[in-house]
Image (cartoon, rainbow, N blue to C red; front, side):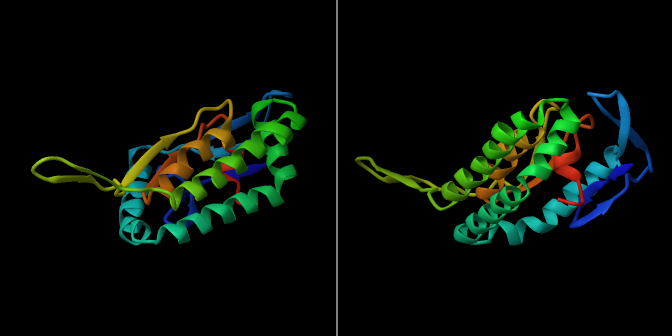
Length: 186
């Protein structure tokens, strides 16, 4: 039986309260895994870790953020079949659908926002008395919650733009479908 843990500060860790939730395979109704059942203490730990990482990540050049997002896309692409199997098992959708739509669109999300990372631009507008300009700066720690129906696709749709912009992310996958976001084998 698989055990999915929280990923906080670079490590897979159990919930502070040691709570667990069962993860069911919709096609069979059987429990195939458990996932850490976090609470406010886990969220606080994740936010502290993200805040600690923010100075370094937000200062990372856009080209490097783009390279890392591209590397994530490459890593997903190399393991398309593994991700499709995990999505199918978690959601109950046909593996071929996950293989042909969900995983490729997830890869495309990462690639799109990798390219966008180097395209952020500032604007300036000249008025009769001043030059007004806007800067694009990271905000800090961003919270992202992923629903159960398109776990990997919507995860990448939320997390990739936040990372591309230089923000750090605390992501909460659905406890119903955690495999593609929390599996240590991926």
